[in-house]
Length: 225
Image 1 (cartoon, rainbow, N blue to C red):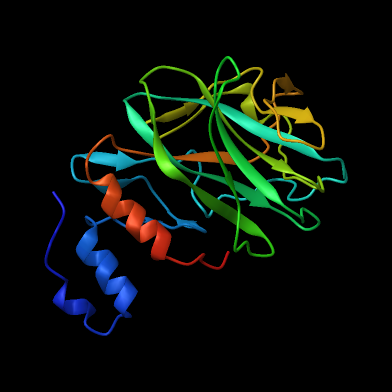
Image 2 (image 1 turned 90 degrees about the vertical axis):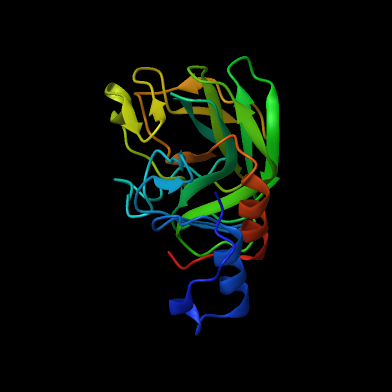
């Protein structure tokens, strides 16, 4: 249940922050924003959770590869419970400039949602929220991805030799970490050496609290990396 009373300890906060506190549940350290995500652990929202595969303290082995070709990069994932994908995020290194677009796909390649990133920082985790949270089913595989015009993406070779599990989310092992070269965004299906390209989904609950969370997402600003 959402709290309708402001926290008296936060009297000195800015007006938008106080409104966010009134409009949302206690997020236990999670701030979902239109331009960014600050999360160190899966956070409770009522009886449900917001989950990501990695925290914002996680960093890649290689933040910026030398490959400068335009490419779509993604990760296969599934949730142990029904939910909604609210945002897509990726780790940005030096040279990964230009326009970035994020997408959510079904396992067969149907694009379920897309968004253009804005207000990016020079490096670190970047996040963009879909216009509306996208419902997903439990145990079904989806792909979340982003397209970069400039390449220089983050990578960890061999990362998905074992599955990655955090909160309700699992990125399966094997042919995971997917990509597709091209100047236009498209469904990534190729995989090389189980490489992690540091793309992530922000998955929340399937509840009526989502509109309040979306209002916070629209009013918030991107945090520094």
